[in-house]
Image 1 (tube, rainbow, N blue to C red):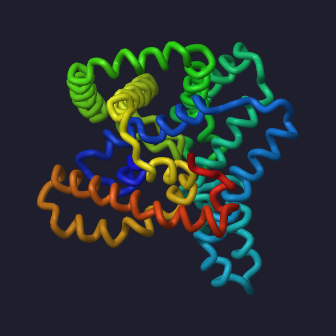
Image 2 (spheres, one colour):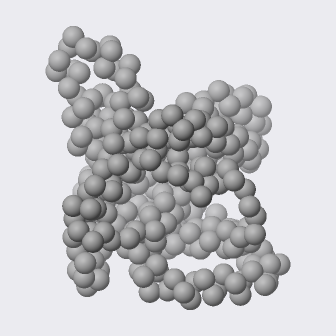
Length: 317
């Protein structure tokens, strides 16, 4: 969530770096946490509460002003629900899913994983998605549509799922071993961050909400995985840190996705006014993004108590 907020601050020096891994990380984690339900009916019931209802309510809350403005103009009014239901970022110049394209795309992928229980079939779908991404890129077809965004997101989700189902025990053992060598791990993180930053400058325009993988799909996947490894190593170093806010943030990610720009906007103006160069802008926007993330903690706590449907009835541990 921190990197999503920071990415939407668009700090000039760091934007290619942030976008090289922030959305891939989201889908790798989602794949790692995916658990197939016993039946499709159970799957739908679970995701109806945790994804579909919050998605619809948050979209309505975000752009209710559009409904009010065009309540007597039916053709214009219908653009909003049509765009939301079809998963477009915006639809015919009307607001739609916007940042919650993540959720729409995630739901489609989870449906595919629930249905396709064979790993060979999932591997075949992964290859087809990569080919489809290349075709879209070749024809410069980037409609900002959650359905076509599945092409780039599916391989990352599959990677997370494979790691979870095949290497979870080895990964847990690895965490324990890595934790014993904190200084070498820290040095490794610094080196990898430098590599990530340098390589991302050659990646071109990566915008997954438009299905854009940049100048090289190979570099796109390499950087997505490398950035995830970096975040994993940082998490290992912070494994003993107990910060209640993390659990609260984790249950309110959809709310953060939908409204973080509204909270960041006033801070962003301050950052722009005092930043004298790209590096300072990047540092200040990162700090501002962190403050925005923390500002959501009491908001999520209130929603959890009084409006749990907005966060999918999730409870923090």
